[in-house]
Amino acid sequence: MADIGKDIERPLGQAIRPPRTASHGINTRALVAALAVLAMAGVSGAIALREKPFRKPQEAAVSTPKVTVAPAPAPQPTPAAPLATTATPNTGTPMKSGGPQIIHVQTEEGDGPPKAAIVIRDPSTLGQNLKIAHIPDRALIEASDTGPLPVRAADGRRPFDVYARPWSGSRGARVAIVIGGLAVSQTGTQAAITKLPAEVTLAFAPQGNSIGRWMQAARQSGHEIVLQIPLEPFDYPNVNPGRNTLTVAASPDENLKSLHWALSRTTNYTGVMNYMGARFSADATAMGPLMAELGKRGLAYVDDGSSARSLAPDLALKDGVPFVAGDTAIDAVQDRGEILKKLDSLEATARAKGSAVGIGSAFDLTVDTVTSWIAEAKKRGIEIVPISAVAIDPQKG
Image (cartoon, rainbow, N blue to C red; front, top):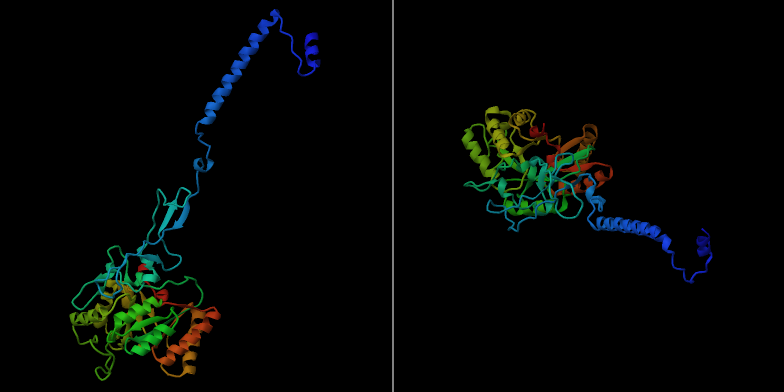
C-alpha cells in the first residue's frame, strides 16, 4: 500500500518501477478483464453497424392514413367539336360539396404515388373540368341519324351530372336564373354569353343556327346549358312554338322522333326546358313518354312554371328525372324597373325557402338588368347557382 501511495505522489513523466514477480497473478486477472471489455465493445460495435429496426422511427411507427383527393386524369388532346365523333377524356371534378369523391388513403409519407390506395367513387357526383367543358364526353353520346344523342354512360354517369357547373354547396340563399332563346339571334346570343355572369344557366332553342358553336362558347365561358323543347300550347297551331313541336295528337313514336331531333342539335347540356307546352304538359298520355325518355338518358327537366296544370313534377319523380320548377318569369314586361322587382322577389323567396328560380329570355334589356342585379345581389350574400344546383333529384333521394 505504501508503494501505491508513492506512485500516486510521483510527478507525471517519471518512470514507474517494474512490478515485482509476486504480482503476476494480479496482472493476469487485469488482462482477462480487459479482454472481456474489448469483446463486449466489439459486439456492441457490430450491433451498432447493423440496420436497427428503429433507426428510422418514421418508417417503424404506425402512420396515420393520409387522405388526399385524387388528381383528375390528364385530358387527351382532341379537337373541340360538338359532334359524336369528338373524343372527350373522362376528366372529372367534384361538382357538389358533401358528396362522395375519389380519394386515396395513402399509408406512406412522400410526394410519389401511394403504393396502395382505397378508392371511393360515386359517378353521379363527378362533373367536367371547366377547362374542357366545351368538349363532349364520348361516353355520354349515342349516334343517331339526326346527330349525337345524350345517353347514360356505362359506368352510370349522366349528362345531368357531368355537364353540371360546380357551385359552393352551401345552404345559404340561392338564386338560379335561366335565360332562354339563345341561338335565335346571333348578336343577342353573343351578348348573353359575353355579358351574363357564368353562374347564369343558358337555354338554347333547337331551331337556332350555329348551336354547336354557341354551345362551345357558352361552356368555355363557364355557363351550364339546357335545351328548350317545343311543346304544344293551347290554340296550336295559331300559337306555334316552331319546327318539330311535340303535340298531343301525335303518336308516342312521332313525338319521340321530334324529341330526338331537338336533342341531337347540340351536346353538353344537363337537361331540357319546355318552350310553351301548356296543353302538352297537362296530358299524361303525351307527357309520359317524353319524361320516361329523359329518365332513360339521364337528363333533367326544367318546367318554366308557366302552367299550373303541368304534370311534370309527378312524372319526373316516377321516372327518376331531376326536376326544377321556375318560380317567376322575370321579364314578361320589358321594363327595367319591372324586371328588377321580379328579381328582388326571387331574392325574398330564396331567403325564405333557401332557393328560387327565375326564367327569362335573351333580350338586351333582360341581359343588362340581370347582369347588374347579380353584382349587387352577391354583395348581399345571395349565391347565384346553376339550375342543376336546385334540382330535385330522385336518384339521390
